[in-house]
Length: 289
Image 1 (tube, rainbow, N blue to C red):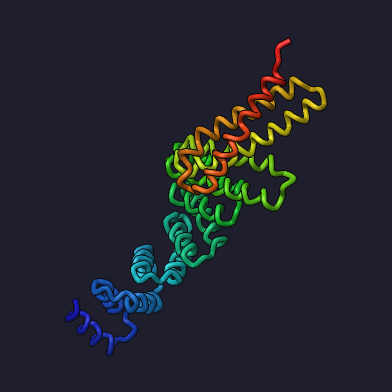
Image 2 (image 1 turned 180 degrees about the vertical axis):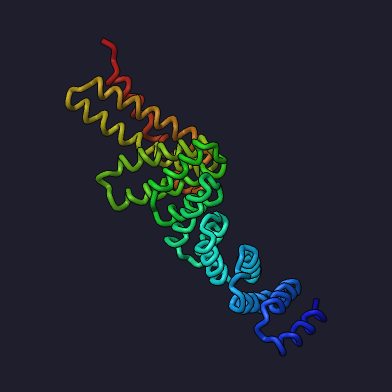
C-alpha cells in the first residue's frame, strides 16, 4: 500500500484533481490508517466529483473520523449524510452520538428523534434519547419513552435504571420546595418501586428505603391530625399506611446500604426509634367497636 501510494501521488502531480486517482489515494491512506490525511483526500475527491458523495463515502469518512476520535468531523459527515439521505436512520443516529460527544445535548436529541421517526423502536436511539432527557432533567419525557419501550418489549434491565434519574430529580425538588415534599416523595417512591420491579439493584433498594421512611412519617402526621379532628376511621387508615411504609423501609434499606452507608444507618435508626409509634397509633385509632 505504501508503494502504491507513492505511485498514486506521482499520478496526481500531472492530474491533481482527478477524482478516480483521488479515490485510489483515499482508500490507500485509509488502508494505512492515515485517517486524518484520508479524510482530507476524501473531501477533495467529492469536491472534484460530487457524485462520489454516496452512502459508502459518508460511511467511510464517519468511520475514519471515529477512529481518529474527531467527533466534530463525525458530526459534520453524519449531519451531511442525514440531510442528503433522509430515510437512512443510521446516519441520523450517528449524528446524535457525535453531538453527544460534543456536549450538544439539544441538537443530539433532535438527531435521535429523526432516527426514531425513520426507524421507530430502535433501542439504541431510545436509550440515548432517554439519557439526554435525564441530563436535561426532563423527567416526564424520560418516563414516556421508557414506558413506551418497555410496553413494546424493551430490555427491562436497561430501562429500569433509566427511571432512577427522575427519582433523583424529585428528591432534589424536596430541598427547594418543602411545601410539596410529600408528593415528591410519593412519586419518587412509586418510580423506585417500578424501577426495582424491572431491574433490582442496590440503588433501587436505597431509594425505596429513603422515600418510604419519609412517607411513613407523613402518614403518622396525617393520622395524628385526623385523630385530633375526631376522624378515627381516616386516622386508622393513615396509621396502617405508616406501618406499611416502615415495613418497606426495613425490607429494602439493608440491601441498599452500600449506596450510602451513613444515610442508610440514619434511616434504619429512625425506623427502630419510630416504627413502634405507628404500631401504637394502629392500636389506638383502629379499635373495634
